[in-house]
Image (cartoon, rainbow, N blue to C red; front, side, top):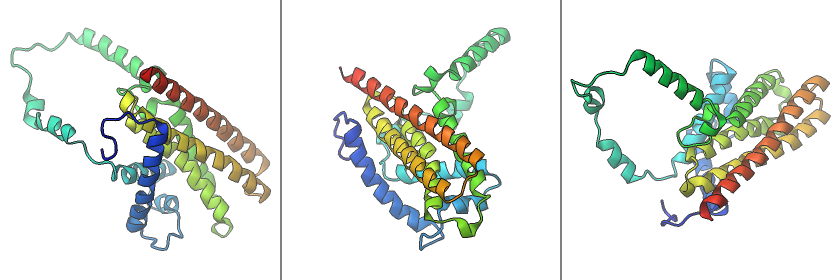
Length: 254
């Protein structure tokens, strides 16, 4: 990667690099969006194009990741490794005399693997799954519920604060996903931290805008209490997660 040169980057070096990436991804965003004037937030378009709020959320996060990924050059070594295998090797690579494992033993193995894959410790590894990261699940469910709430707000009442609030609520989860995509190896842990800090920033911004929306009567008393409580807890959990990632990084370089 340009600028990496074998040096172990910390979160601040990655943060500076990611800020440049975001500038370029904004240019790409304007190019691919049908609203050339940029007046319609992308999440509104995705809601109209999707079958459900869940689908709109998934599409939003996927687009965010792809836009950033466009400015991270492919590692040629990865392509070389992939070329070592082809479909025929994968499908017919078993020796004809190999025996399949006993079914009962295989079931026990699968059960053990499934249990391990659902654990939080396993999620915080390069073999884990983002969907098993409890923090991301919380951010995902929160974002989807915000989209459902947003659809109840009449278009004539959707001012800039409202639009920014919904967009930032989605970016909380998107930036968590971006960080997680870098994994937990020492070389890229700083990028994970930098992305997660952006998630924390969007959570703080969302809390501030939510208070402004409350004064404008966008929420009733019950919905405000529910969303504010969830967002406040999510923000705090992200802060703890950032510190956990920092501890991992610091321990790896000691």
